[in-house]
Amino acid sequence: MLLPSYFIVEIEKYDRVPDVQLPENSYLCYKISSDSIDLISSFYRNLFLFPKNHPFCLLIDFTPDSVKSKTLMELIVSISFHSSYIKNDYDNPHVLFELEKSDNNEYISIVREVFKAQGYTDIEVILMYKNHNFLSDISDKYVRFDLGENIESFSSAYINSIKTLTSSQFSFYFFLAYPGNLPQALKIIDNAESTIREDLLQTYSILNVGKFLTLKENALLSKLELIEDQPGSLDGEDLDYNSTIDRYKKQVTELLKFYKREYEILPLWYKRFGHIIKVITGKRTFKSLFNDNAEKYKE
Image (cartoon, rainbow, N blue to C red; front, top):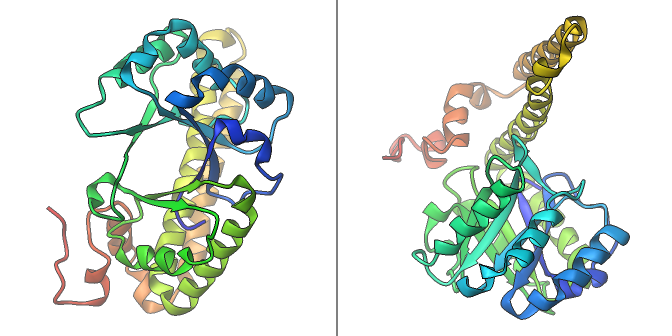
């Protein structure tokens, strides 16, 4: 996947999720709504007894009154202890929230505190809003697709969304009404990205570099986190610690060598790497790379 992609499935449909291999940069996300709160215990049991072995996170769609149950929230926190739960930012679990409106987020603070009470430093909050029109507010940094029974037609919408993006900081969220459609959805997206590669090579290349950088950064941060957790408990094992540091530095050096090697074979337009990085980080528009009259920098 060119951009982080989450496939949303309601928890009551967990057993209908096909056992497929998810592409790199794609994840499952299980939605817990007010209507499915009573099913959390059975979902929890199935999750640990019959794991799908996919990286996943939770999407919470409660009314604020629902989180008053401490037992309920502690059960949700315990789901994040699963080995496949997504934690990229220094062990802070991803938690998505679907809200009616932007000011209805008081209970997010409650959820955050429950996670902290169970030993987490924080949670990585991702906000989504119901009835959000397609790319109506690009500051939200996400694109949402509500996929019903017939999903063949969303290929063109996916391609158009890539054309409309202003940076590589977006994420895609696919709400699957029928989890059995997941393999078909993955195939449609793969074919669409092949079309993008053929017709929009520059855009495809920029997003692909952005994906590589993000995934590599997450991997290195995870290793760095392990290193930082060690000093206080080593007491005499400095050699092992220094060896770990050396391995980390070696990985960074190899990463730099990779870019130097790949840089030499890139076409001329792509060697303006500094400009591309600004696009990747959202500081410069795509259009300015290819149109001198376009606005270059964002406010």
